[in-house]
Length: 282
Image 1 (spheres, rainbow, N blue to C red):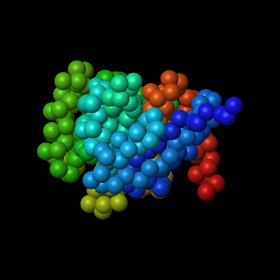
Image 2 (image 1 turned 180 degrees about the horizontal axis):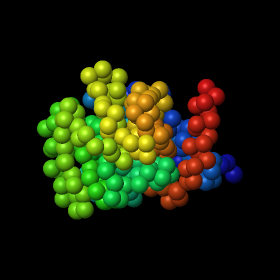
Image 3 (image 1 turned 90 degrees about the vertical axis):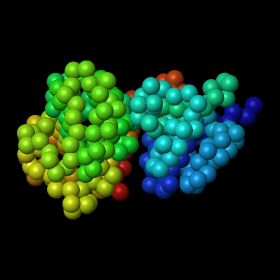
C-alpha cells in the first residue's frame, strides 16, 4: 500500500519568502512524528477570502496568517475564540467537520510563554508597551490576565493608545491601565518594556529616555533578527541587562497553532535553539 498523503498546512502573507514558519513547523512535525507539510503562500491583496477558500478546497487543513491579512482573516472566520475577538485579528485558521471556518490569535499567548522562558515577571510589575497597533492589541488580554501593577500604552498618536486602554479597561481588574503619547512618557523605570511599533527605532523621531529601564528590566522587541537591533542596542546602552527579540514569541505562537491543529504541543526549547544556531551560522 502507498503511504497516505501528508496533511497540508501553510502560512499566508505578503511578502512571505522570509518566513521562518515552514522551518519551525517542519521541526515540530519531526519532533512529534506528525505526517504533514507546511508551505509559504503568497497572498494577493484584495483576494484574500477567495484564496483562503481555494486553499482549503484544495486540501489544506489549516492556515497561519501574517501581515497584512490578519484583520481580513478575522472578518472571514465564522467562529472566533475570545482572544481573537479581543485582538481584532486572526493568525490561525482551520475548518471543523461542518466546514465552518474557525479563527484564533496565538500571538499573545506566544509572547507570554516566551516571557516565562526568559523569567520575565508580570504580576505586580510595571509594564510599558510602545505602539498601539494590531500587535499591541494582541498582547493586552494575556498580559492583563497576569495582573501587572501598572500597564502603560504609549503611542505617537496618543488618542489611539487611549482608545486601546478604553477597549481593555474591563480586564484591568488589578492593574492601573493608562495611555499616553511618546512625548510624555513617565520618568520612572519599568520592569518590562515592549517595543511593538511598526518601524522599531528606525524612525529618528522616536527618541526614548534612558530612564525607562533599570538594570533588572527586560527589554523585548516583537520583531526578530536585525530589525530588533536598534531598540535592543538602546536598551543595553540605557543600562538594561536583559534584552530579547521576538524569535521566541514566533516559535511559541507557532507551537500553539500546531497544538490547535494536531492536538499535541511540541517542545519549543530545542526548536528555538536550532533556529538560533542556524541564524548564527548563516
